Amino acid sequence: MDARISTRAPPAGPAWRARDADTFRYVVLAHLTRRLLTPGQPGPGGGPGAGLPADERPGQSPGLFTGLRHGPEISPVKVPPAVGIVRFAVVVTVVVTVPLYTPHFGRSALGIAIAAALAVSAVAAVTWQFSDGRPRLWLAALVVMGAAGGVLAGLSALSAAVAISFMVAISAGARLPAEMSLGITAETVAAFLIAGIASGAPAEAIVGWTAGLIGMWAFGLTRRAYLFRAVEAEQALEQARRAHAAETQAAALAERARIAREIHDVLAHALAAVSVNLQAAEGLLDTLPDKGPEVARIVECVERASALTKEGMAEARRAILALRDDGTVLYPDPPAPSPDPPAPDYQGAGQPGGGQLAVRLRALADEHRAVGDAAVEFTVTGTPRPLGADAALTAFRTAQEALTNARKHAPGQPVSLTLSYPSDGMTLLVSNPLPPPGGAAPLARAGAGYGLTGLRERAALAGGTLTSGPSGGRWEVCLRLPG
Image 1: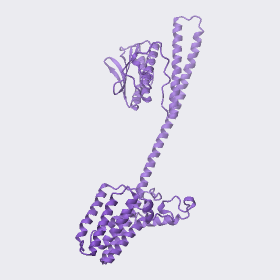
Image 2 (image 1 turned 60 degrees about the vertical axis):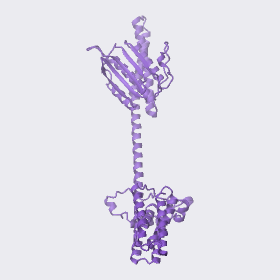
Image 3 (image 1 turned 45 degrees about the horizontal axis):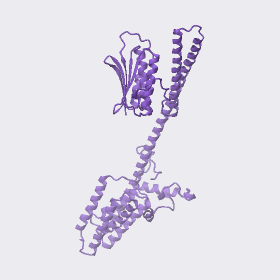
Image 4 (image 1 turned 120 degrees about the horizontal axis):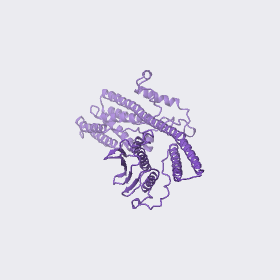
Protein backbone atom coordinates (compact mmCIF):
# COMPACT_ATOMS: atom_id res chain seq x y z
CA MET A 1 0.00 0.00 0.00
CA ASP A 2 1.21 3.50 -0.81
CA ALA A 3 1.58 5.07 2.62
CA ARG A 4 2.14 8.57 1.27
CA ILE A 5 -1.39 9.09 -0.03
CA SER A 6 -2.69 10.68 3.17
CA THR A 7 -6.21 11.02 4.51
CA ARG A 8 -5.41 13.56 7.21
CA ALA A 9 -7.21 16.42 5.38
CA PRO A 10 -10.97 15.79 5.30
CA PRO A 11 -12.46 15.77 1.79
CA ALA A 12 -15.15 18.31 2.76
CA GLY A 13 -12.97 21.14 4.02
CA PRO A 14 -12.11 24.34 2.13
CA ALA A 15 -8.43 23.43 2.11
CA TRP A 16 -9.29 20.22 0.33
CA ARG A 17 -11.31 21.96 -2.36
CA ALA A 18 -8.30 24.11 -3.18
CA ARG A 19 -6.35 21.00 -4.10
CA ASP A 20 -6.69 18.65 -7.02
CA ALA A 21 -9.36 16.02 -6.68
CA ASP A 22 -8.72 12.29 -7.11
CA THR A 23 -8.85 12.40 -10.89
CA PHE A 24 -6.62 10.78 -13.48
CA ARG A 25 -4.58 14.00 -13.64
CA TYR A 26 -4.07 14.02 -9.88
CA VAL A 27 -3.01 10.38 -9.75
CA VAL A 28 -0.51 10.72 -12.58
CA LEU A 29 0.95 13.99 -11.27
CA ALA A 30 1.25 12.62 -7.74
CA HIS A 31 3.00 9.51 -9.01
CA LEU A 32 5.44 11.46 -11.21
CA THR A 33 6.12 13.95 -8.42
CA ARG A 34 7.07 11.16 -6.02
CA ARG A 35 9.32 9.62 -8.65
CA LEU A 36 11.09 12.93 -9.31
CA LEU A 37 11.45 14.05 -5.71
CA THR A 38 12.80 10.81 -4.21
CA PRO A 39 15.79 9.80 -6.39
CA GLY A 40 18.32 10.88 -3.77
CA GLN A 41 16.88 8.84 -0.92
CA PRO A 42 19.15 5.98 0.10
CA GLY A 43 17.92 2.60 -0.87
CA PRO A 44 18.80 -0.83 0.48
CA GLY A 45 22.50 -0.85 1.21
CA GLY A 46 22.77 2.87 0.40
CA GLY A 47 20.98 2.81 -2.95
CA PRO A 48 18.25 5.23 -3.95
CA GLY A 49 14.63 4.77 -3.03
CA ALA A 50 14.86 3.12 0.38
CA GLY A 51 11.60 3.11 2.26
CA LEU A 52 9.53 3.40 -0.92
CA PRO A 53 7.28 0.72 -2.33
CA ALA A 54 8.93 -1.45 -4.94
CA ASP A 55 6.88 0.14 -7.71
CA GLU A 56 8.27 3.60 -6.82
CA ARG A 57 11.99 2.97 -6.33
CA PRO A 58 14.00 4.62 -9.10
CA GLY A 59 15.50 1.97 -11.32
CA GLN A 60 13.77 -0.82 -9.40
CA SER A 61 10.25 -0.76 -10.83
CA PRO A 62 8.71 -4.24 -10.93
CA GLY A 63 7.97 -4.64 -14.59
CA LEU A 64 5.51 -7.07 -16.08
CA PHE A 65 8.03 -9.90 -16.48
CA THR A 66 9.30 -9.38 -12.93
CA GLY A 67 5.73 -9.64 -11.65
CA LEU A 68 5.19 -12.86 -13.57
CA ARG A 69 8.44 -14.28 -12.25
CA HIS A 70 8.31 -13.23 -8.60
CA GLY A 71 4.63 -12.45 -8.06
CA PRO A 72 3.00 -9.04 -8.51
CA GLU A 73 2.07 -6.53 -5.85
CA ILE A 74 -1.69 -6.79 -6.10
CA SER A 75 -3.76 -4.42 -3.99
CA PRO A 76 -5.90 -6.40 -1.53
CA VAL A 77 -9.50 -5.99 -2.62
CA LYS A 78 -12.32 -8.19 -1.46
CA VAL A 79 -14.50 -8.52 -4.53
CA PRO A 80 -18.20 -8.77 -3.57
CA PRO A 81 -20.06 -11.80 -4.93
CA ALA A 82 -22.34 -9.51 -6.94
CA VAL A 83 -19.34 -8.07 -8.82
CA GLY A 84 -18.10 -11.57 -9.59
CA ILE A 85 -21.51 -12.50 -10.94
CA VAL A 86 -21.58 -9.39 -13.15
CA ARG A 87 -18.13 -10.20 -14.53
CA PHE A 88 -19.15 -13.74 -15.32
CA ALA A 89 -22.34 -12.46 -16.95
CA VAL A 90 -20.29 -10.10 -19.13
CA VAL A 91 -18.08 -12.97 -20.32
CA VAL A 92 -21.13 -15.12 -21.06
CA THR A 93 -22.73 -12.25 -22.98
CA VAL A 94 -19.61 -11.82 -25.11
CA VAL A 95 -19.38 -15.55 -25.80
CA VAL A 96 -23.04 -15.70 -26.80
CA THR A 97 -23.30 -12.50 -28.87
CA VAL A 98 -19.97 -12.36 -30.74
CA PRO A 99 -20.82 -15.36 -32.98
CA LEU A 100 -23.97 -13.51 -34.08
CA TYR A 101 -21.96 -10.73 -35.70
CA THR A 102 -20.26 -10.97 -39.07
CA PRO A 103 -18.03 -12.59 -40.04
CA HIS A 104 -19.48 -15.79 -38.57
CA PHE A 105 -17.42 -18.66 -37.21
CA GLY A 106 -15.91 -20.97 -39.79
CA ARG A 107 -16.96 -18.85 -42.81
CA SER A 108 -13.50 -17.43 -43.44
CA ALA A 109 -10.03 -17.08 -42.00
CA LEU A 110 -11.26 -14.01 -40.13
CA GLY A 111 -14.10 -16.05 -38.62
CA ILE A 112 -11.65 -18.74 -37.50
CA ALA A 113 -9.42 -16.07 -35.90
CA ILE A 114 -12.40 -14.58 -34.09
CA ALA A 115 -13.37 -18.03 -32.79
CA ALA A 116 -9.83 -18.70 -31.55
CA ALA A 117 -9.55 -15.29 -29.89
CA LEU A 118 -12.95 -15.72 -28.28
CA ALA A 119 -12.06 -19.16 -26.91
CA VAL A 120 -8.74 -17.96 -25.46
CA SER A 121 -10.39 -14.85 -23.98
CA ALA A 122 -13.16 -16.88 -22.34
CA VAL A 123 -10.76 -19.42 -20.83
CA ALA A 124 -8.43 -16.66 -19.57
CA ALA A 125 -11.38 -14.70 -18.12
CA VAL A 126 -12.71 -17.71 -16.21
CA THR A 127 -9.21 -18.49 -14.90
CA TRP A 128 -8.70 -14.87 -13.88
CA GLN A 129 -12.09 -14.81 -12.17
CA PHE A 130 -11.27 -17.77 -9.88
CA SER A 131 -7.56 -17.15 -9.19
CA ASP A 132 -7.76 -14.12 -6.93
CA GLY A 133 -5.79 -15.84 -4.18
CA ARG A 134 -2.84 -16.75 -6.47
CA PRO A 135 -1.11 -13.57 -7.65
CA ARG A 136 1.05 -15.00 -10.43
CA LEU A 137 -1.79 -17.00 -11.97
CA TRP A 138 -4.06 -13.96 -11.63
CA LEU A 139 -1.52 -11.76 -13.44
CA ALA A 140 -0.81 -14.35 -16.16
CA ALA A 141 -4.53 -14.79 -16.83
CA LEU A 142 -4.97 -11.01 -16.98
CA VAL A 143 -2.10 -10.69 -19.48
CA VAL A 144 -3.50 -13.43 -21.72
CA MET A 145 -7.00 -11.98 -21.42
CA GLY A 146 -5.69 -8.52 -22.38
CA ALA A 147 -3.92 -9.79 -25.50
CA ALA A 148 -6.72 -12.12 -26.61
CA GLY A 149 -9.43 -9.60 -25.69
CA GLY A 150 -7.66 -6.86 -27.64
CA VAL A 151 -7.38 -9.08 -30.71
CA LEU A 152 -11.02 -10.12 -30.37
CA ALA A 153 -12.17 -6.49 -30.06
CA GLY A 154 -10.13 -5.53 -33.11
CA LEU A 155 -11.43 -8.41 -35.24
CA SER A 156 -15.05 -7.85 -34.14
CA ALA A 157 -15.04 -4.11 -33.51
CA LEU A 158 -18.81 -3.70 -33.86
CA SER A 159 -19.69 -6.36 -31.25
CA ALA A 160 -19.65 -6.56 -27.46
CA ALA A 161 -16.17 -8.12 -27.54
CA VAL A 162 -14.54 -4.90 -26.29
CA ALA A 163 -16.12 -5.50 -22.86
CA ILE A 164 -13.37 -8.00 -22.03
CA SER A 165 -10.68 -5.42 -22.84
CA PHE A 166 -12.48 -2.91 -20.65
CA MET A 167 -12.40 -5.33 -17.69
CA VAL A 168 -8.67 -5.82 -18.23
CA ALA A 169 -7.93 -2.08 -18.26
CA ILE A 170 -10.01 -1.34 -15.16
CA SER A 171 -8.62 -4.26 -13.11
CA ALA A 172 -5.02 -3.53 -14.09
CA GLY A 173 -5.32 0.14 -13.16
CA ALA A 174 -7.11 -0.56 -9.87
CA ARG A 175 -5.01 -3.40 -8.50
CA LEU A 176 -1.52 -3.23 -10.04
CA PRO A 177 1.36 -0.74 -9.75
CA ALA A 178 1.37 2.02 -12.33
CA GLU A 179 4.10 0.62 -14.60
CA MET A 180 2.65 -2.88 -14.59
CA SER A 181 -0.88 -1.71 -15.26
CA LEU A 182 0.38 0.61 -18.00
CA GLY A 183 2.17 -2.31 -19.66
CA ILE A 184 -0.94 -4.51 -19.64
CA THR A 185 -3.13 -1.68 -20.94
CA ALA A 186 -0.59 -0.87 -23.67
CA GLU A 187 -0.52 -4.55 -24.64
CA THR A 188 -4.31 -4.61 -24.89
CA VAL A 189 -4.46 -1.40 -26.92
CA ALA A 190 -1.67 -2.58 -29.23
CA ALA A 191 -3.40 -5.91 -29.83
CA PHE A 192 -6.64 -4.09 -30.56
CA LEU A 193 -5.03 -1.63 -32.98
CA ILE A 194 -3.09 -4.29 -34.87
CA ALA A 195 -6.11 -6.58 -35.19
CA GLY A 196 -8.46 -3.71 -36.02
CA ILE A 197 -6.23 -2.23 -38.72
CA ALA A 198 -5.47 -5.66 -40.18
CA SER A 199 -9.17 -6.60 -40.34
CA GLY A 200 -10.25 -3.25 -41.75
CA ALA A 201 -12.31 -2.13 -38.78
CA PRO A 202 -14.02 1.26 -39.12
CA ALA A 203 -11.84 4.20 -38.14
CA GLU A 204 -14.42 5.57 -35.75
CA ALA A 205 -14.49 2.20 -33.90
CA ILE A 206 -10.71 2.10 -33.67
CA VAL A 207 -10.46 5.65 -32.33
CA GLY A 208 -13.46 5.31 -30.01
CA TRP A 209 -12.49 1.98 -28.44
CA THR A 210 -8.87 3.11 -28.04
CA ALA A 211 -9.99 6.19 -26.15
CA GLY A 212 -12.37 4.03 -24.13
CA LEU A 213 -9.56 1.64 -23.08
CA ILE A 214 -7.37 4.54 -21.97
CA GLY A 215 -10.30 6.04 -20.07
CA MET A 216 -11.02 2.73 -18.31
CA TRP A 217 -7.37 2.48 -17.29
CA ALA A 218 -7.55 6.03 -15.89
CA PHE A 219 -10.68 5.08 -14.00
CA GLY A 220 -8.83 2.10 -12.56
CA LEU A 221 -5.99 4.34 -11.38
CA THR A 222 -8.47 6.60 -9.62
CA ARG A 223 -10.08 3.57 -8.06
CA ARG A 224 -6.64 2.44 -6.84
CA ALA A 225 -6.08 5.81 -5.15
CA TYR A 226 -9.41 5.48 -3.34
CA LEU A 227 -8.51 1.94 -2.32
CA PHE A 228 -5.27 3.22 -0.81
CA ARG A 229 -7.17 5.80 1.16
CA ALA A 230 -9.72 3.28 2.35
CA VAL A 231 -6.95 1.02 3.64
CA GLU A 232 -5.27 4.02 5.28
CA ALA A 233 -8.55 4.96 6.93
CA GLU A 234 -8.96 1.43 8.30
CA GLN A 235 -5.41 1.44 9.64
CA ALA A 236 -5.92 4.86 11.21
CA LEU A 237 -9.12 3.64 12.84
CA GLU A 238 -7.34 0.57 14.18
CA GLN A 239 -4.53 2.74 15.56
CA ALA A 240 -7.09 5.02 17.17
CA ARG A 241 -8.75 2.02 18.79
CA ARG A 242 -5.42 0.79 20.10
CA ALA A 243 -4.58 4.24 21.42
CA HIS A 244 -7.97 4.44 23.14
CA ALA A 245 -7.45 1.01 24.67
CA ALA A 246 -4.00 2.05 25.89
CA GLU A 247 -5.40 5.26 27.39
CA THR A 248 -8.19 3.31 29.08
CA GLN A 249 -5.70 0.84 30.52
CA ALA A 250 -3.46 3.67 31.73
CA ALA A 251 -6.43 5.36 33.39
CA ALA A 252 -7.42 2.09 35.05
CA LEU A 253 -3.87 1.56 36.34
CA ALA A 254 -3.79 5.11 37.67
CA GLU A 255 -7.09 4.55 39.46
CA ARG A 256 -5.81 1.28 40.91
CA ALA A 257 -2.72 3.07 42.17
CA ARG A 258 -4.90 5.76 43.76
CA ILE A 259 -7.04 3.14 45.50
CA ALA A 260 -3.92 1.35 46.70
CA ARG A 261 -2.63 4.59 48.22
CA GLU A 262 -5.95 5.21 49.96
CA ILE A 263 -6.00 1.69 51.39
CA HIS A 264 -2.43 2.03 52.56
CA ASP A 265 -2.84 5.49 54.09
CA VAL A 266 -6.23 4.98 55.74
CA LEU A 267 -6.83 1.32 56.47
CA ALA A 268 -3.30 0.03 56.98
CA HIS A 269 -2.30 2.95 59.22
CA ALA A 270 -5.51 2.68 61.24
CA LEU A 271 -5.06 -1.05 61.76
CA ALA A 272 -1.44 -0.53 62.76
CA ALA A 273 -2.53 2.02 65.39
CA VAL A 274 -5.22 -0.34 66.66
CA SER A 275 -2.69 -3.18 66.90
CA VAL A 276 -0.27 -1.01 68.91
CA ASN A 277 -3.00 0.06 71.30
CA LEU A 278 -4.18 -3.52 71.76
CA GLN A 279 -0.67 -4.62 72.60
CA ALA A 280 -0.40 -1.78 75.11
CA ALA A 281 -3.74 -2.74 76.66
CA GLU A 282 -2.62 -6.36 76.88
CA GLY A 283 0.57 -5.28 78.65
CA LEU A 284 -1.39 -3.16 81.13
CA LEU A 285 -3.76 -6.00 81.88
CA ASP A 286 -0.84 -8.31 82.57
CA THR A 287 0.39 -5.91 85.26
CA LEU A 288 -2.83 -6.12 87.27
CA PRO A 289 -2.21 -7.88 90.59
CA ASP A 290 -5.63 -9.47 90.85
CA LYS A 291 -6.65 -11.37 87.72
CA GLY A 292 -10.13 -12.64 88.23
CA PRO A 293 -12.23 -14.45 85.60
CA GLU A 294 -13.45 -11.15 84.19
CA VAL A 295 -9.94 -9.89 83.63
CA ALA A 296 -8.96 -13.20 82.05
CA ARG A 297 -11.91 -12.87 79.71
CA ILE A 298 -10.87 -9.32 78.83
CA VAL A 299 -7.30 -10.47 78.13
CA GLU A 300 -8.64 -13.23 75.89
CA CYS A 301 -10.77 -10.75 73.95
CA VAL A 302 -7.82 -8.36 73.57
CA GLU A 303 -5.58 -11.16 72.30
CA ARG A 304 -8.22 -12.27 69.81
CA ALA A 305 -8.75 -8.68 68.63
CA SER A 306 -4.99 -8.30 68.20
CA ALA A 307 -4.86 -11.47 66.10
CA LEU A 308 -7.76 -10.26 63.95
CA THR A 309 -6.05 -6.90 63.50
CA LYS A 310 -2.85 -8.55 62.31
CA GLU A 311 -4.83 -10.68 59.89
CA GLY A 312 -6.60 -7.56 58.61
CA MET A 313 -3.25 -5.87 58.06
CA ALA A 314 -2.06 -8.88 56.09
CA GLU A 315 -5.23 -8.75 53.97
CA ALA A 316 -4.68 -5.03 53.36
CA ARG A 317 -1.09 -5.68 52.24
CA ARG A 318 -2.27 -8.37 49.82
CA ALA A 319 -4.92 -6.02 48.42
CA ILE A 320 -2.34 -3.25 47.92
CA LEU A 321 0.05 -5.69 46.24
CA ALA A 322 -2.70 -6.87 43.90
CA LEU A 323 -3.62 -3.29 42.98
CA ARG A 324 -0.01 -2.25 42.42
CA ASP A 325 1.12 -5.32 40.49
CA ASP A 326 -2.14 -6.01 38.60
CA GLY A 327 -1.99 -9.53 39.97
CA THR A 328 -4.57 -11.91 41.32
CA VAL A 329 -5.44 -11.79 45.01
CA LEU A 330 -4.61 -15.23 46.31
CA TYR A 331 -5.56 -16.82 49.55
CA PRO A 332 -2.97 -16.93 52.30
CA ASP A 333 -1.88 -20.26 53.58
CA PRO A 334 -4.79 -22.07 55.22
CA PRO A 335 -4.82 -21.89 59.01
CA ALA A 336 -3.54 -24.72 61.11
CA PRO A 337 -6.06 -27.53 61.38
CA SER A 338 -8.25 -27.52 64.43
CA PRO A 339 -7.93 -30.32 66.98
CA ASP A 340 -11.22 -31.75 65.76
CA PRO A 341 -10.81 -33.96 62.68
CA PRO A 342 -12.50 -32.63 59.51
CA ALA A 343 -15.89 -33.94 58.64
CA PRO A 344 -16.25 -36.42 55.75
CA ASP A 345 -17.88 -33.65 53.68
CA TYR A 346 -14.47 -31.98 53.27
CA GLN A 347 -12.93 -34.54 50.98
CA GLY A 348 -10.67 -32.97 48.41
CA ALA A 349 -9.71 -30.11 50.70
CA GLY A 350 -6.34 -29.84 49.00
CA GLN A 351 -7.89 -28.80 45.70
CA PRO A 352 -7.20 -25.10 44.99
CA GLY A 353 -10.34 -23.03 45.24
CA GLY A 354 -12.52 -26.03 46.05
CA GLY A 355 -11.81 -27.83 49.32
CA GLN A 356 -9.44 -25.03 50.32
CA LEU A 357 -12.40 -22.66 50.26
CA ALA A 358 -14.31 -25.06 52.50
CA VAL A 359 -11.42 -25.18 54.97
CA ARG A 360 -11.18 -21.40 55.10
CA LEU A 361 -14.93 -21.00 55.55
CA ARG A 362 -14.84 -23.52 58.38
CA ALA A 363 -12.03 -21.54 60.04
CA LEU A 364 -14.02 -18.34 59.54
CA ALA A 365 -17.07 -19.92 61.20
CA ASP A 366 -14.91 -21.07 64.12
CA GLU A 367 -13.54 -17.54 64.57
CA HIS A 368 -17.00 -15.98 64.66
CA ARG A 369 -18.25 -18.68 66.99
CA ALA A 370 -15.36 -18.03 69.39
CA VAL A 371 -15.63 -14.23 69.29
CA GLY A 372 -19.40 -13.84 69.46
CA ASP A 373 -22.12 -15.25 71.61
CA ALA A 374 -24.06 -16.90 68.76
CA ALA A 375 -23.79 -20.38 67.31
CA VAL A 376 -22.44 -20.62 63.76
CA GLU A 377 -23.23 -23.84 61.93
CA PHE A 378 -21.20 -24.63 58.81
CA THR A 379 -22.11 -27.44 56.42
CA VAL A 380 -20.90 -28.54 53.00
CA THR A 381 -23.04 -30.49 50.56
CA GLY A 382 -21.73 -32.04 47.39
CA THR A 383 -18.17 -32.67 46.32
CA PRO A 384 -15.88 -29.62 46.43
CA ARG A 385 -14.27 -28.91 43.07
CA PRO A 386 -11.68 -26.37 41.90
CA LEU A 387 -12.77 -22.76 41.50
CA GLY A 388 -11.01 -19.80 39.99
CA ALA A 389 -9.17 -17.44 42.31
CA ASP A 390 -11.70 -14.64 41.72
CA ALA A 391 -14.68 -16.94 42.36
CA ALA A 392 -13.17 -18.38 45.55
CA LEU A 393 -12.29 -14.93 46.84
CA THR A 394 -15.80 -13.69 46.09
CA ALA A 395 -17.31 -16.56 48.08
CA PHE A 396 -14.97 -15.96 51.04
CA ARG A 397 -15.69 -12.22 51.11
CA THR A 398 -19.43 -12.90 50.92
CA ALA A 399 -19.24 -15.18 53.95
CA GLN A 400 -17.21 -12.59 55.87
CA GLU A 401 -19.67 -9.79 55.15
CA ALA A 402 -22.75 -11.92 55.85
CA LEU A 403 -21.43 -13.14 59.23
CA THR A 404 -20.44 -9.59 60.20
CA ASN A 405 -23.90 -8.29 59.25
CA ALA A 406 -25.54 -11.04 61.27
CA ARG A 407 -23.50 -10.04 64.33
CA LYS A 408 -24.32 -6.35 63.80
CA HIS A 409 -28.04 -6.57 63.01
CA ALA A 410 -29.09 -9.80 64.77
CA PRO A 411 -26.76 -10.25 67.76
CA GLY A 412 -27.17 -13.54 69.60
CA GLN A 413 -29.08 -15.21 66.75
CA PRO A 414 -27.70 -18.53 65.39
CA VAL A 415 -26.21 -18.33 61.92
CA SER A 416 -26.26 -21.06 59.29
CA LEU A 417 -23.44 -21.10 56.70
CA THR A 418 -24.00 -23.62 53.89
CA LEU A 419 -21.62 -24.29 50.97
CA SER A 420 -23.10 -26.51 48.26
CA TYR A 421 -21.91 -27.72 44.88
CA PRO A 422 -24.78 -28.37 42.48
CA SER A 423 -24.06 -29.66 39.00
CA ASP A 424 -24.05 -26.18 37.42
CA GLY A 425 -21.79 -24.31 39.85
CA MET A 426 -21.45 -23.36 43.50
CA THR A 427 -23.90 -21.86 46.00
CA LEU A 428 -23.15 -20.18 49.31
CA LEU A 429 -26.10 -19.50 51.63
CA VAL A 430 -25.79 -17.54 54.89
CA SER A 431 -28.99 -17.17 56.93
CA ASN A 432 -30.06 -16.22 60.42
CA PRO A 433 -33.42 -15.62 62.16
CA LEU A 434 -34.68 -12.06 61.98
CA PRO A 435 -34.16 -10.23 65.29
CA PRO A 436 -37.24 -9.38 67.39
CA PRO A 437 -38.59 -5.87 66.89
CA GLY A 438 -36.90 -3.35 69.14
CA GLY A 439 -34.07 -5.74 70.00
CA ALA A 440 -30.73 -4.30 71.04
CA ALA A 441 -28.29 -3.99 68.13
CA PRO A 442 -25.54 -1.58 69.20
CA LEU A 443 -23.46 -2.21 66.06
CA ALA A 444 -26.33 -1.82 63.59
CA ARG A 445 -25.20 1.64 62.47
CA ALA A 446 -21.52 0.74 62.19
CA GLY A 447 -20.13 0.82 58.66
CA ALA A 448 -20.95 2.80 55.52
CA GLY A 449 -23.81 0.57 54.38
CA TYR A 450 -22.24 -0.49 51.07
CA GLY A 451 -21.20 -4.01 52.04
CA LEU A 452 -23.93 -5.89 50.14
CA THR A 453 -23.59 -3.53 47.18
CA GLY A 454 -19.91 -4.37 46.94
CA LEU A 455 -20.70 -8.07 47.18
CA ARG A 456 -23.16 -7.82 44.29
CA GLU A 457 -20.50 -6.10 42.22
CA ARG A 458 -17.99 -8.84 43.08
CA ALA A 459 -20.50 -11.53 42.15
CA ALA A 460 -21.25 -9.86 38.81
CA LEU A 461 -17.54 -9.61 37.99
CA ALA A 462 -17.15 -13.31 38.77
CA GLY A 463 -20.09 -14.16 36.49
CA GLY A 464 -22.53 -14.97 39.28
CA THR A 465 -25.40 -13.39 41.19
CA LEU A 466 -26.01 -12.40 44.81
CA THR A 467 -29.41 -11.99 46.43
CA SER A 468 -30.25 -10.87 49.95
CA GLY A 469 -33.40 -10.25 51.91
CA PRO A 470 -35.94 -11.76 54.34
CA SER A 471 -37.39 -15.17 53.55
CA GLY A 472 -39.60 -17.22 55.87
CA GLY A 473 -38.68 -15.29 59.02
CA ARG A 474 -34.96 -15.42 58.26
CA TRP A 475 -32.50 -13.08 56.61
CA GLU A 476 -30.69 -14.82 53.76
CA VAL A 477 -27.67 -13.93 51.67
CA CYS A 478 -27.27 -16.29 48.73
CA LEU A 479 -24.34 -16.30 46.30
CA ARG A 480 -24.50 -18.36 43.10
CA LEU A 481 -21.43 -18.80 40.92
CA PRO A 482 -21.11 -20.83 37.71
CA GLY A 483 -18.95 -23.94 37.93
